[in-house]
Length: 267
Image 1 (cartoon, rainbow, N blue to C red):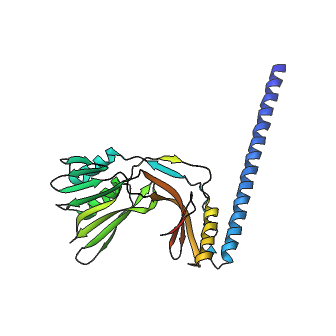
Image 2 (cartoon, one colour):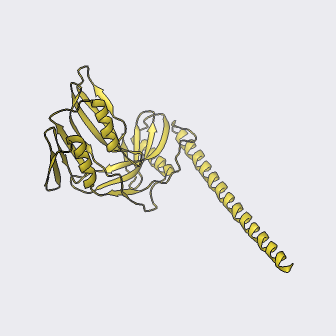
Image 3 (tube, rainbow, N blue to C red):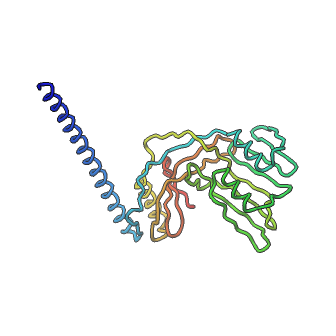
């Protein structure tokens, strides 16, 4: 009997501990929600004072990933070469440039992720070719800008983990509806994330954005959305890296606030 009572007492104690932990968790969550609501209200009032509408729910509370370091992928270059040139291609290296060639096209890839290809014989199905290449390179769907003769270009935004890299793209050149060249960024699907814990939050990015507007003049009347995306760090011969940025969509343009440096770029 004593053992049975002791067992019940232990169970009761464990239940009380669980209730206490759950209560503490709910309290912290409620406190966090209250803080977020207060921050949102203050930002809405702050922007409103300068005749800029910031709607409730627009502020993102995600944590930006920091810097993404990438290494040149020989496997991805081979896949690209096979797609553009066919399986029967030749390759050579010259400094940091890899050169691939076949009877139908030539391709060059560089250490910093840039590539360009020229076609001697254009792919037959332009639309399907562009879509397949964009899928291989993890880009958005291509957007075409052509005249009545089919001359012009198409472009697709590069992505990393399904988030856009606003300053990296793949561009197709077309003549008479046929592709004559393609160039852009060849970015590996995998990277190493490095965070410092000091990356700007979305409210901090919005505050920096408002400071810029006050210095340079207000542009636009409302903020439509905020979200994390990426910025390519581009130098002629360096390794590939991405920085996380906050995209602030307004009714006039997109603004990108680097979460590491705080630098603001207009898209």
